[in-house]
Amino acid sequence: MYKESIMDELRQIEIDVVEGERRLAEKEALLIELKQRNEDTRRVEAELDVMRRSQLDREQNRQRLLSLLHP
Image (tube, rainbow, N blue to C red):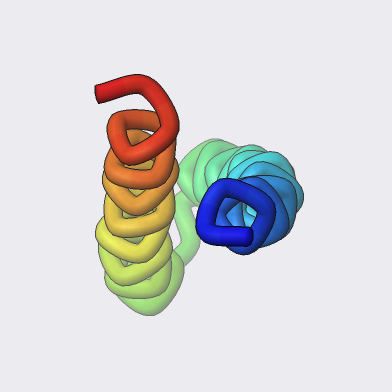
């Protein structure tokens, strides 16, 4: 039962990691576009910073779950 609940959580975090990577790529593309047009990038850069920290948290959580499965 314990392993099954970890696997369920791991499946969800894997989905979240992939989705986070997709959103980061979109935001990074927007940042490049804004820079090319010489527009203000501060808001997007701040959003990217928050998104990157959240993604790091998700990736660390994934590693934690994997380590519980394979001590």
